[in-house]
Structure formats: structure tokens, C-alpha cells
Image (cartoon, rainbow, N blue to C red):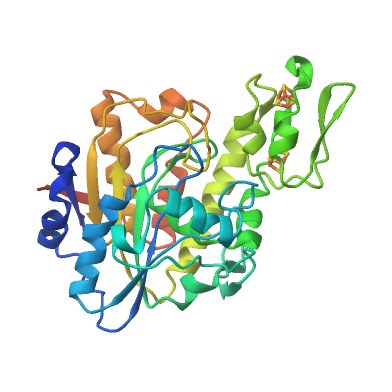
Length: 348
Ligand code: SF4
Ligand code: SF4
């Protein structure tokens, strides 16, 4: 059966509150329960993250249902402004996410150092258990607010990526990423050391002004790929991307086990890279499309993928990452029973 996905064009984004109310997608929200709103607060200098003014209407709806919403995210494995709770809260505040602007507090889900976590049994192909952030596990239900854009490893990042990778603790993120270790062709390396500074695993060093990697230490986070302007790093895209996509989906299965949620994706500032990168150049590559919402993360990602490609006039993701098939995550999620790719788009 087709799942309903609701669509609000970007030019009418100010109608977000009435759009979400009309969609009637918050049936899972119960009085006096803790509801985690999982979001990405954006890295330093990143411009693509969902803005606080889009969060406030969502919080308002939850408050009207007398539940207890809180904004949340988990720490990153790369070194940045979100790699521990202290700095994560500072960057969230700097980007305008405050109780005054959003209407609810922020609780970083995996503790001060990103190691407060919970193991969940899934018994799947890549993982028997997944390790997710404690407060994601503790929440009674969810709203996932996802920024839909390109992604350097998975082709696109949307709801599934925000749930699976986003809710993993550091141990979990490491487990998902570590099959995608970059390749090196250091012929063009100028020895600037930029990648070395961004490698939190200390897997990179310079020998005679050329980069070398200790593969044992590499966690596959992808920071070096994006921080080298000389295309020294690459990935074995097909194999590595498909494994990471499937691993992310297995984490989705763990996060959503016995829980329900609502999913809201923002199809704007559609960039090549994800919001973890503090790249001034990570700007939008096409016009903003709109906002989609629903109760099925697979249907939502499929609809987002189709809407972006339709607005672009051809397959946007094939254009930016010809080597990656980003639909692997959708196929595997459907296979695991996490939702359906069959959707009915209802425009507001
Ligand atoms: S960032 Fe690129 S050019 Fe600079 S040291 Fe690293 S690999 Fe070499
Ligand atoms: S070598 Fe690159 S991919 Fe590996 S941990 Fe360091 S920055 Fe991340």
C-alpha cells in the first residue's frame, strides 16, 4: 500500500505549522512523554542545516499535545565543533538553537564525551547489535528533522542517514564508517598538512612532504577526502558506499525498534556534501524544492529523491556522484521492513 507523503513547496515554508497540523502525522505523540527531535545543528561555517525558525512550529505542535520535546544529536567521530557535548551545545547556541527561539531544551544524546550509549540487538547481515546514543534509546518517541542533500559516501543523506548514522554513538559511527577507508594517490600531494590536521584518528602523517596513511588507525570518516583540495583521496565507491548504506540502515532498524516517529525533510540548500563539513564552498547546487513530511522514513527519502531529481530536470545525484548508487539504502530499508518506496504525494 502506498504511504502518504505530504509536500509543502519551499516558497510557502512560512506555512510549516499549518501544513504539519493538516497532515495529521503526530498520532504517536502521547501526553507527558519524552519526545526526541533529532536534528543536525550544523558545523562551524556550514549554512545548510535546518534553521531554528523551522524547529519552533514543530515544538509548538508537540507542546500542544502536552508532551516533553527536546532537541538532540549525538557526537561526531571527526574533530569539529560537535565532537563532544560541550562544544556541540556552543555551536548549537551560535547557530541560534536556544530555548527562546525553539521552545524546548537541547540534550546531547551520548553524553559529554560521546560514550554514553546503549546496545540494541538487531541480528542482521552486518551487525548483531548496534550501539546508539543513550538518550535516543531513552526517548519515548521521535521526530526526525532531516536536511536532504548530497552525501560524499552515501550519495544522498536524508531521513535514513539522520536516523542511522545520526543516532549512533561514537562507537556506532565508527562501526558504520570503517568499511570506507579512502584510497591515496599522493602524486598530487603538496604536503600542506591540511588532511593531517583534520584526521582525529591520527592515521595520516607526512613523509618527505607526501601524505601516508596508517590503515589500521583509519575510521573511514571521510574528512580527509573533503579537506584535500588536490584530490589525493578517493574511495572504492561502489563496494564501500553500498556497505556503509546497508550498515546505516541496520542502525535505523535498531533505533526504531519498538518505537515510532514522524519524519520531516527539508529539500533546500541542496549541496554536494553533508552538513558535517564546515566548507564555505558547500553551497546549494540547485533551487530549493520544499518540505516533505510523513510517518514512513523510506517513503519520505524516496519522495525526496524523486522531487529533487524532478526539480533538477535529470538525476541530480548521478550528476554529482556518478560512481554511487544511493538507492541501495532505500532498497535495503524496504527489504528489512522499515517502510516502503511506494508513496502517494499529497501537495498542500
Ligand atoms: S591535504 Fe592533500 S595536498 Fe595537503 S597534505 Fe593532505 S593529501 Fe597532501
Ligand atoms: S585517514 Fe581520513 S578517513 Fe581515515 S580517519 Fe583520518 S580523516 Fe578519517
